[in-house]
Length: 337
Image (cartoon, rainbow, N blue to C red; front, top):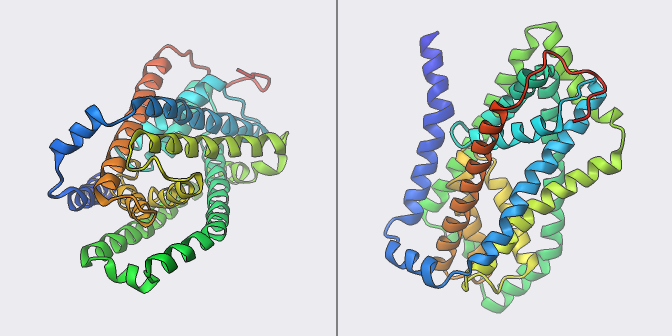
């Protein structure tokens, strides 16, 4: 039993940190840190970064409101404030143990509003399925509309797809392979974790109810509006940051959309907030659109660091706020706030 706990500990905490650290070390080996801080101090327009931050907050608020809506069909009515703070806390906790936040936010609702843990987890799985479908559709449309851009780029520069692949170093291929392997291991781990809830009939039924909650939501348009709000907020949270740096300010909205979509897939690799894989993936896309290598690595480092700090601040706020939130053994069906 102790050996299994040790293996789980290594898999959940140590392995993601090591993977993230190795990728970041490989990307920033020989990096000119003095030049980086000089750029931050004298060549960065921080107003755009400040403008981007509210969208990082609205994305999480929309997610909390959508989650509250999906809980209503399974007769669970947690308070809106508890939902929002649980989402804040879930993102922050995932910086320590990747993906643990999905379970933690269900536990917060159970503790403060008496919400069924298994039903809440079922709705979280439902949310993830919806988000996955949305991102896949967004990726397909992005590739479709950007295909002429890629073709023109390759024609004008004389670069072929084979040439791009040949330009990858052996280490670059290794990073890509490791990220793909880590993603597969994450999916296997999630399947094993979810199987635990099948040991008891009540927990399994609660999970099932949560998964099918979408069939009975009160307003499909509102649900879709929340979903669109989540991903538009994420996009704007990323988009405004390109104007902070001269080396990326020329990028079009469609180019940023490509980098955003690729980054969405990169964060699926189980590292803290996608650190490492996200840097590598977004930097590679920026290079494709003409951003200089040094400008690219500076951009992804600054943006990811500050956006991660925002997640941490919101998590700390939620942790404090929940200490002053009253608990209920079981919320009444009519509770709305």
